[in-house]
Length: 419
Ligand code: AMP
Ligand code: MG
Image 1 (cartoon, helix red, strand yellow):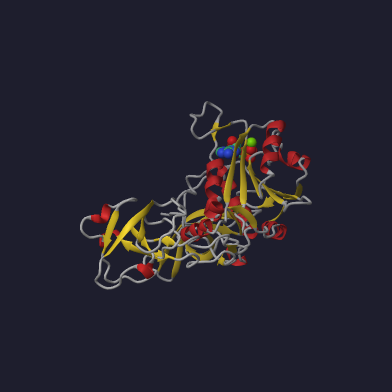
Image 2: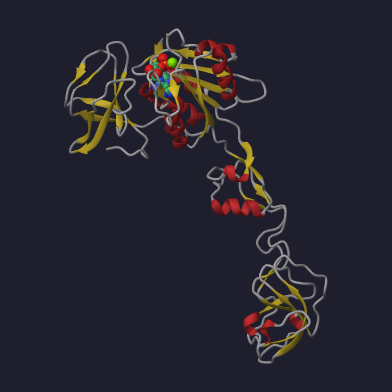
């Protein structure tokens, strides 16, 4: 058994930032680019019609008030191409998005057609009157937005919808981005059934699975849910082997001292080196932490959390949270939940031998924050944790901290609704 502060320090020392990853473009949304995106084409890729109308050779188009009467040589919808040249006396009927045909350089909008000739197609004639005609009008020139070989997105930029669209246009099917930490979640226990089941006598719904799968994306990491493994060595071993492909494996159950607490031995057989097992902490004493090192890839950090749901969550917040933050490359001040001082509004009892975490409601009051301990029966009680704004952290010593005393409170994630 080790001290809580030492255990947290060991997690911090074992975790290291992951290198950037080449990922599919959409998987990089919301992330920072680690390498610039360079265009593989011009944009537009060719001179493009920006209006529905008629593509003309501008030098032959009569300026001023005069009406041009032109033969329509070809019809060009978006996606159509032609080799027919456009010279004097000739035009192409063209739709927005089509390439300007050879010889043409300007588009006269269909609204400029007079005498009902606006519907003229290939083989017909159109009469066009465009008093404000300028050469090059309504044409987006090849490369006007960007050129092939140009850096269109710089390293360090965070990708949102516009940036993803631009990268797609520039031909980037994959990008090199800061990594999203992959966290495998495995619940162990032969008594566990999925939350969709009505538990039979002796069965327990798997609440840790959904709880941890919810906690991971709140840290901007990606959960990989592995479901439930029964307390049989082969079942747990197969699931652990799968989980070791992730950056972090968070397993719950089977790490304490019962007959079927098989997990530490299975971790050892899978090559996971133990860093610590059992921490002076309440709830959460049985927690296990280790690391699987490999030559070719970054290590996988492995957490065995206690099966009791409240213990599991407290251990997740104290140990797994900083590990994910460090792997993601976040600054030190973003590793842990923030803490504050608050005045107790009711008594809170410390444990004799280890630091204790107790759910509380927090409110702002004259002279600072107040923490109201919530009714809570301990490590299996999620009802007492749900809606709690924070956890009162009391040092070991066993004494009752009375109303009015100032204590330390770990604040829950600010995005989580509390009452
Ligand atoms: P263990 O750590 O495996 O000894 O489990 C301790 C307690 O937590 C037992 O009552 C288990 O039934 C319960 N438990 C273990 N895993 C889960 C889970 N995923 N969801 C809900 N309860 C669990
Ligand atoms: Mg168990």
